[in-house]
Amino acid sequence: MALETGTDCHWISEVLSQLGHEVIVADARELQSISGSRRKNDARDAEQLARLARVDVRLLHPVRLRNRKTQQDRSVLRARDVLVEARTEMIVAIRGMVKADGGRLGACSAESFPEQARESIPEGMRRALAPLLEMLDELNEKIRYYDQLVAHLAQQDYPETSLLTQVPGVGPVTAL
Image 1 (tube, rainbow, N blue to C red):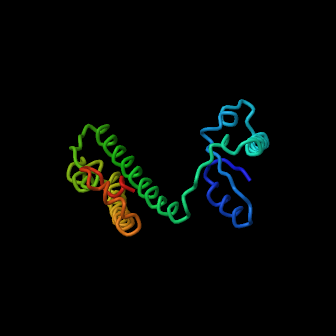
Image 2: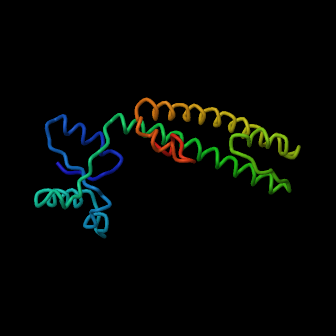
Image 3: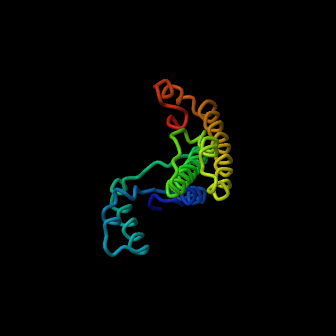
């Protein structure tokens, strides 16, 4: 059975393999006959995959999928990234609202922003921004939790990351 890389390819290939099928996961980025087609639809894509698999599997540019545990561990990194992005968006929004009111917030780290901002936000803006600053405190706490989890994963499950973390500026997140 042939299928393309995508969100569902991990569990679908796992289920099909457990049912006794040989599963080939094609690199969707390499299949110009599918990704570059103007007449793209599921039925046509499936037929194209089947034809390529029948002629020569190498035409599918097969990929080897990560195992389930590795995929789940990557979810830790993704979840952390979602929180970091949310924190960044909130900081940018707060800075923008303060700037629109004629104020300025000094430069500081994302972790120290809530504390620094509380002292610098104009009095009239505090009621509006206090809940956002509280959420930033919570986001910082959750990000610290993920940082500890990532460090634990790197140390316990992926010891090879210790070589990468020897490079200045490379921590467990980047190494994983």
